[in-house]
Amino acid sequence: MAKELSENYPVALVNSLNPYRIDGQKTGAFEVVDFLGDAPDMHVLPVGNAGNITAYWRGYKEYRKDGLARQLPQMWGFQAAGSAPIVKGKIVKNPDTIATAIRIGNPASWEQAIDARDSSGGLIDSVTDKEILSAYRLVAGKEGVFVEPSSAAGIAGLIKYKKAGKLPQGKRIVVTVTGHGLKDISWALESAAKPKIIPVKAAIAAKALGLA
Image 1 (cartoon, rainbow, N blue to C red):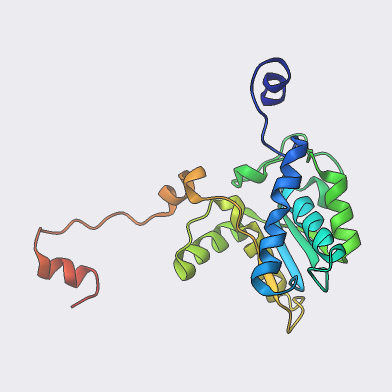
Image 2: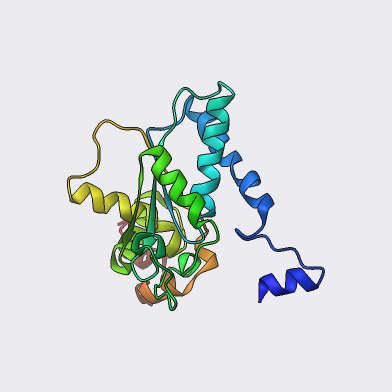
């Protein structure tokens, strides 16, 4: 529908179908290199329409070509298990995952994502909804970063490979969490603990907060 609207009405399409998006988004790779002094050894991302992995790979290649980065990273991408067309090698007609932003059965940048994976010596794998939600809570609890479930797919993949003993040691790894938690608030609300009701007294509040 969005594509049809943009073709027939004065509506700008800003998702991965927009050819300008990739060139704009590749600047994220420039920022990573500028901050670290070089490209990381690995860059891990969620994969839905595959715009992110495509854009970052393009950015790294351009910085390397221009002499602003000495190396290129391996590109690791993770799709939701119920929506993993690249992993399965076929279109998923009815993608099913709680990770709404990567619930894509036929990615717009499919071929470019495969090129990023293969050219960089990286991989594209899948993670379950359970693994995604676990990573989602971990990022919030340990880092205080509120992301949408889809954004935690890269973290989930990293944890999956760490547990399996397949994560390379001594590598500098960048993981991009791509979307704010307010984009998909339902899982935060469903997984939140019920509030504890207390009297309006400072001493009782302090005790409830573990301050006394």
